[in-house]
Length: 264
Image (tube, rainbow, N blue to C red):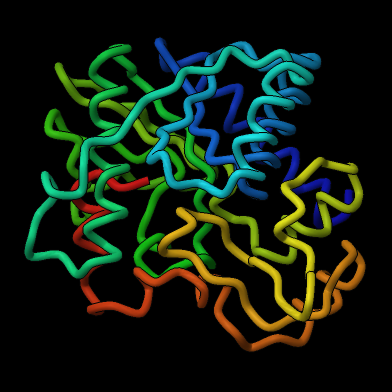
């Protein structure tokens, strides 16, 4: 197997383990490149269909192209879509910087969906290379009854052996893409022909490398208008993937505070 085959096999194994051990189970679908790869992998893992719901925690501030993509591919991929709203920003921790406070709405929205559907497992498309705090995650990461992440109390995962501890009120976050890099995601998208929101491709010298809410996400300078050009750009760039996310330019601990509290 080549590198992409190995990553695919590992992710398929993780998804099957999650489905076997955790019920009810749902997958977060943010409509971005990583979560579309994750849906694609789930279809491969389960003979062409996703056997659990996908959840969109909607802030109401996504780009119009993202909502169009969601409506189109919910039908094309025959997904069981669960929609959840987020509380207003005024209800969020006022000590957070502005962009982080806006992003915190998703933390509260996700917590409400987990409680509403009594989920034991939530599959999320984070990667270790995306942001420093995410490098501290496990593949199967327990969250306490208050949805909080105890960074210092995570189970060891030697030789791909994944623990799924369960106590009343807690749930497990499952991260099948944790070992993938940004360029792996794009090479896999190219190989598999996975559909994407076209905001990832350059127009007028700019494109989005990471998609979030339209009011706190900015494009980066780029002329990469095709899959091959995006991959070629990533092979040489030294710019951070999340350089267009306003939250990542605020106080150093803001992201970790959100993650500890239950952020996606």
